[in-house]
Length: 252
Image (tube, helix red, strand yellow):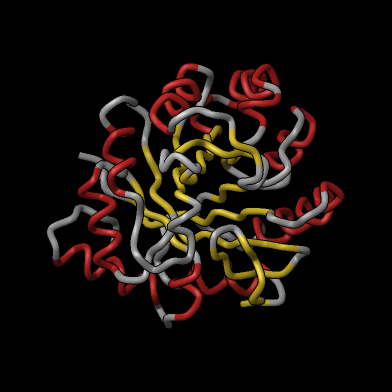
């Protein structure tokens, strides 16, 4: 049986590391990503995920420079996402040191580009970012474009679509859980895990190590967090010790 992974998410806006709450990114945690990556390298994290949440498309160039910089000292797999809108830009991120690409809006706007990237680098390099949010009828529906556009599909349907079209992993987040400290959306994670064969990364809402245990028990293959890891010293090591004590197979 493969061991579960612990992933540190670093959310970047205009070059600074910020805190996220329901996709609102206000509090600055670090003034650059390099120091955050340096800390996680020493804290036994299994993977690092950099997300560009800047408001402008013009942030692509600066984010690319950040990826080049941090990849030189990142000793674990580096996954990156945000404003990936072409084969050229996705390729430049890989060639700058990224191991995997997190893709969100492109699954809706240009599926051929996703297929091209998957064909060029292999589906193991393509992570489908699926964000859901409750609509006015109390139904969870998938949103793209930084949570602003409702595409009218549920998470299970969209996960199956992404898997069929080149995704090697699912990065699942419930926007209503983002930063609310109530844990992952385990109900939806469980439903997705029963329908797809590719790994699922749970994200959004973690405030305790127990929340990570709940995510893994719901069917996630990996658990990810952002805010909690930045405010607790040696946080990822603490999380792994807790999960190990709960008989979860995880890399120590």
